[in-house]
Image 1 (cartoon, rainbow, N blue to C red):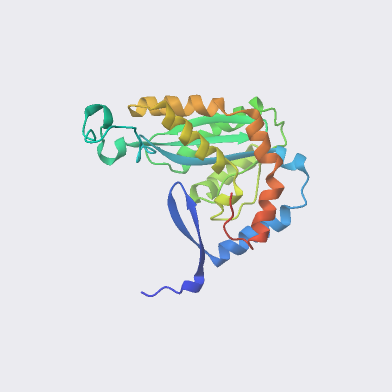
Image 2 (image 1 turned 135 degrees about the vertical axis):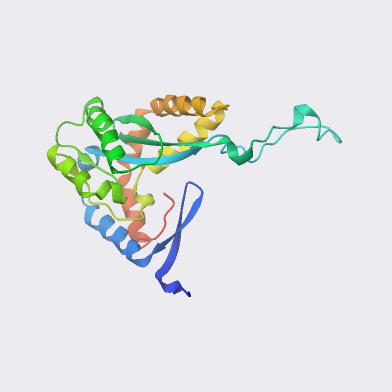
Length: 238
């Protein structure tokens, strides 16, 4: 089958994966940015941002550099053991706001609608309370089918939680992506040796994310929207 290139005008990179994005998603991103550009800074401070990501064990250890003398490249002190398949990975869900990071949860097994709602039930309201967002906060999630399922949307309705209308294929618009990148770098520096340590370091480093960093990401959110508008819904530096 020949696919028309006109349908795919750009690529976005998320977690090291290049994703082709259709023009319709580009238009949706542009519409979101245009519609929300005039919102006050206080509006974005009320948003609880969320996402899930995969974190690899030894994921950032592809290259290491050492100072060594000539003809000593194979000496033990100049080598790093390799692990097949990267040593494994974990999936985590987390949330944050301008007031700091909320809960982080390791996702065991395959995520389905029921498991997602359990994560929300056990972590969303508690995170909102810890971050002092009040009862009228806005929750952000992407458009994964599990997130938009009828049962999940009914859960939000029963809890009186407002969900932010979100365009598909739009990682550039979610500031949590910046925190994911910083988290993975920090966890890699901890050098976890197994998946148990990986989970522990992920949660520790997530809690260490400074409130000022979280606040800055939200404070500059209008600039992010402007960048998306300038790119006409295309990929940005964010």
